[in-house]
Image (cartoon, rainbow over all chains, first blue to last red; front, side, top):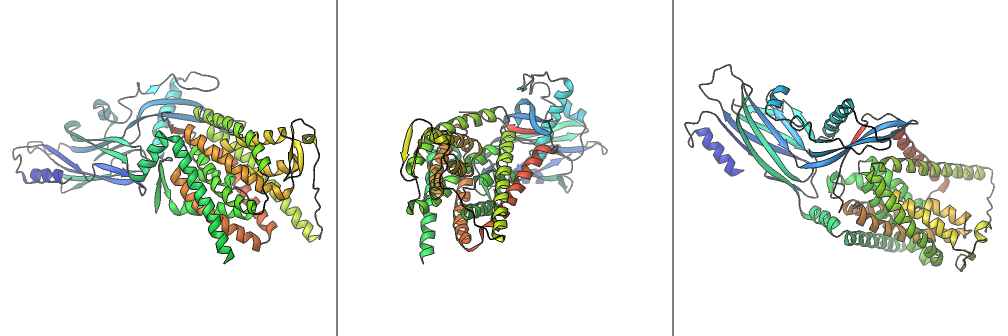
Length: 263
Length: 307
């Protein structure tokens, strides 16, 4: 962080590369997010500076776009249907390599056309490949038609958004003094662990002018990591330990209160 | 203040967990029940994934039934031989139950099946408690005393493989207790309950066990069945959350002891009627979730690699 701040400082004072006309520098307050016992989500600060080319015409428009892409995972999306008045899961589709977290924000609203042209945006770039059409349809094995594909596809984004795992905003980047910017990104407590990519774009007149990427990790640490890895690697011992804890607390609870009652 | 649950992979408020465990423990201490039948649905209500709720609930019941058994053991109210025979059935039942559970997780129907099972169980429990307690209250008003038969002789006494159960003063076939254990084993593994609510009436009415020995014996066998279910869940569904279990156990053990003290001071039937209403309330909530069209008809689950 400090290193990045220093670079930022040089850019601001023009010491490092005084001749540069367009630049984009960024930093973040964290290179790693630790999931410990107290973890209840976090706010990630992404900040930076951008400089417009003086030769650029005055009415040209510059924008900043921040994209955060979490680790990829496979998800099952199930649709409920009413059977005899009961709402039960029926059809299901497996989506492969879906980001576990996705965030996109820009200083002004961007057109879909722009996002598509520049391969930015959540599903625009993967629309066709990402859906596993050899789906796990239950019961009657009906073929999913185009309309249903689209319905599932929209539901995937919607459910992720409802879980605060996907977000697209155009009012979260704060511009300070014309060329400094910062943005606080909400990382909810349900985020998956793994590598997250942060991509920053400087857009001038709907063209990507500068691009910068870096990544950060979300990792379990301390007791959270210990418990998780024991449960996966030594499940039998893990079960036994859980039992022993239950036995000790259950037994001692009864003993303590027995004495307490006698007194 | 919140705590991150490593297996459920989310954070919950620590006081919410402690009060949940405390209240369920209090009720279980007061009525001599395991409390799993309330614990699992309440955990699901606060957002814990169904599989974690079921598996962790089983772990918590181990602690609460140990606490309970000790008291009955000291008074020599546990029929260990009967408990052992029930466990033979329960052993195979819980293995089948875990298999059913894993299949339901794989086809994505676990939430629905758990909801339906809980709705049926809680409605049954709630209604029978409500009827029983209102009858007692009515009888008390009429100053009637209820007489009960000591022994029930039925088909269970005519089957082969008879064994003498000295503590219960019974000479019956081992087949009925094994079948009862088997059913309880399935329910325990799929629902995260001890099953006392089904076990106790079954022991009284099908096996004809004396009421005094029933609670201790059922608690004794529930320790082992839920211990087995905990191990089976830890090794097959990986859904036992040790952090969640720790806080639930701690608060429920304390709550249960307070509940026992309170039970000696308060009149049973009114509180029993109140518990019945709570149970029916939970059942109604489950039913509404099944019957009312949900806001979001899609649900998402991350597919984890199975080791």
